[in-house]
Image (cartoon, rainbow, N blue to C red; front, top):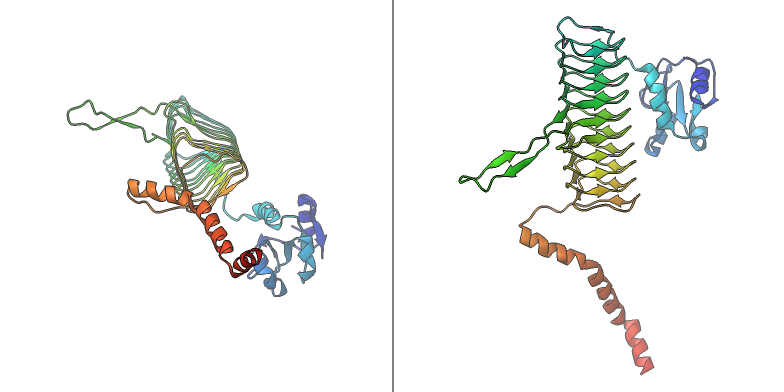
Length: 351
């Protein structure tokens, strides 16, 4: 595409040669003259002097540092994401149903769908238009998929899973497995666990994306719910009856225990642990490795912190002491101030 075409299509200001041809994307360090790159992180600014990229997406205040063609964007990374989608080289799956796919006669498949080899689709499923279901994926009974969904290889949708439009689920993810519901049978002579039936389902809104090998458990009674545009990274565990608000993003190796409700526009970093039955306010940010053990009830806050496990009685004493640190610090500073040479001299003067 010509640079002027890109500028017009994405509402960007062009500084440079409008007829310069772009046929791909690249980094500032390695881009060729026919590729477009971007500057979003200031630490890469020195590479502007040596880049051979055919054009750079850049903010207006940095444009003078760009030696070649520039497309001015308020958010260069967002503009890059949109332009890069035009040059994605990965092949698209052709429409059609592979001869090795097994589809129950009670299920319906929309137009232009692509069903790969060894896909199994159970009874009473509705797969709408333009969906791609890759090799080895298993879809249980009574599932629905909106338009334009893409399931990568070996995804499992257990029964009663409902996907909105344009949902992406990456390889190995399991949606709708039983939640961790067990009750201890103390009335039995030998004791032991008894399974609590998990009779809810999973409802996932439009434009959600779920990473490889992540798990979203089905609800115990009501559905587990992900609202629109929720983004889940790889190897994330979402427990039964969790409700995640729209536009929230959850990074890898995070675990969210059952019946927790997470607000909209939250950012949850990697390896976070969130206890069950909590409420997380809208626009909360939780830093990597944090353990959340109580409600976050004020919107827009950033939370961080994790303390290693220890015997419960010791931890309870430690927690009480930690909660007293602020007052202890204030008292210590006051004592230091009162015992300073200036204060002592002032006291003698007053006497």
